[in-house]
Image 1 (cartoon, each protein chain N blue to C red):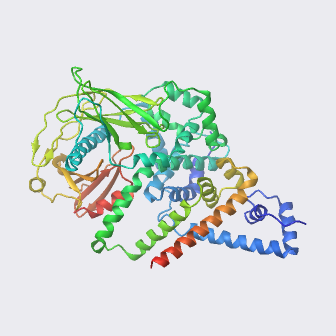
Image 2: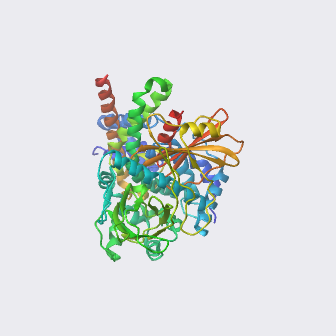
Image 3: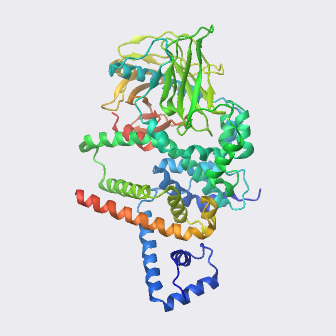
Length: 169
Length: 417
């Protein structure tokens, strides 16, 4: 066992957390899954530990997504209730703003195909093209074009959402 | 020279991690020097990169500091321990107690909505008012993926070793080999073709079936059998038999899922099963139990667990909110606007504690537990799908448990008074 997981953990935790946060959208859950991804890897000795951890993290995020589909309605429910008694819950403005930013990023990312989103988020997490290709099953040569397409889609969707919001006031 | 394509330009922007060789990079640079068209497109791409990066970083995790590495080691050990002794007693008790409340919640809801609950001889599938069907189709792609990940020998073993060791098959979440893991879909299809399933059930569903009897083996009719995780369930027929379908996407093959059986007057039973194919068989024997009805609450005492371990959950007494307050010495917590199923008073570590169950929506029960905060807060292991969040108010510790995402649960908890 030659992999120094403590070192991999130290250097990659933040990127893994960031990646998971953009997949599950719940910080506590993302932290939990990030630790889980490393815990599940400890008895492994892969060639590329960093890519390995991201692979485990991506699998965990996908499992989570299946559950989340079902749970989404709870969030909606809560949102409805929160709107009703918005007066007495006086959330700080910064918090509201953050929630809004999170929601618009989330909706923009939802506009991408699953593969494009994966490629984009792995790129954002700092993985190399070779690692991205390995994980997503893309040809090494198509990573660049996929990335360009994904970024364009993201920017378009984000801009469209912003102008929608403005139109709504 | 021809114009450079976007992929090449992107490669150049993302070097060195794009793997572009230095000589290739120089070639591109030389071209861009002399070609206005490509220089313009490169600038556009650069701009796009910056925009995308700024959008992506518009929300960052608030706390990105890595917890100590030893937590990861402990977590890994715990997981290994679970594999060695698959008998999470406390966990089971919790699951079952929540599930009993769930059963009651159902019933209350069914009655209120005026729908006829089928108590007759037919095994009536109780379709909970949920979006599980829609969820099934949305996540339809996820099924084969998980099969693909449980690659080769692992999958074979998981199939043969029927419902015992859920934790072991959970290991399959780690990729068998990074290379094959995400080629996903096609691998999954191949595997499917190579290993014919003995039972062909409708795509996208697992059949859960079995029989519910009393301790003497006599069939129990109208018992509620459910998979809370999937919001699915059915009532038993006169023969005690039941059968229903759960969406494959909602119950994880990696970790297994809980099947629960409840019948008024009997101790609720919960059991974890790991599906070995498309059909899961779960038989239950329910022990009789006295049920005291008091005001609007239903008491359930000890919960039996399948492996026959003695249950060490404290005794809880159902009381009215006012009586509970008088006994515990602090106000009874509740989230305004949610129906209260039960208010119970008991003791935890020698101190009075109040437990309140509320219906978030049909099929989802929130458990609030309030007690005087002692210095020690123990972490409660929860079965999959349940989340626990705690909040300290003055000298009181309020804990909420439900099958909800942590942020939803926190929001609910903060509204409790």
